[in-house]
Every structure is written in structure tokens, then in C-alpha cells.
Length: 101
Image 1: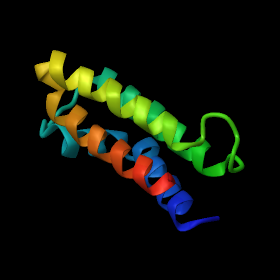
Image 2: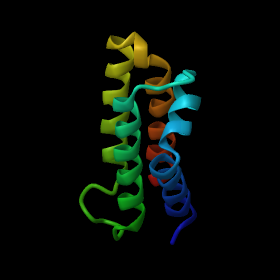
Image 3: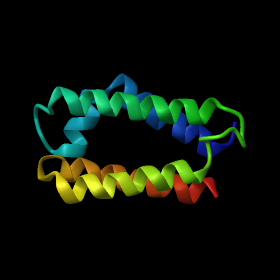
Image 4: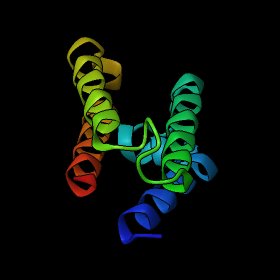
């Protein structure tokens, strides 16, 4: 497994296993809403799946990260309550997109 895949697996594992703590850090809120925690777990699961699927499998390339990055820019622009977490997630997606090239 490449170092980028290992990193993606670890990040995804943290987002799944410690979603509430990740949401606290990303949002700056002591008690993140339960919907944000669920979304964090889902996105973490996507990272784990991308890390484990074979290279070249549809949905494992940088295109998925770029699409995710663009959706998070949209969330940051339209949801003040989730802006900080969306910006953090945008940065994460951008890093993975660049590393996956």
C-alpha cells in the first residue's frame, strides 16, 4: 500500500472512529450537531474505501477528491454554521487530490 493510501486510511479511520472529536476540532464547537458527526463518519468511510480499493477502480482517483472539494466550497459559502468544518474538509480534499496525481 502506498504512503498516500496509508495516510488516507488513517485519516478515514479517525473520521469514522473518532467522528465527534474530529468534528469538534474542525468546527470549533464543543458539541457538534449529530448530523455533522454522521457526515464525518460517512466521509471517513469513503476515505477508507478509497484506500482499500485497487488503483484505477472507479471512484478512487483525484477526480473524486476534486468533486468533494468543490461541494465543500459550496457548503462553506452557504452554511455559516458549518463554514469552518467545510473549509477544513476542502483543504483535506485538496491535499488528497494533489497527492493522488
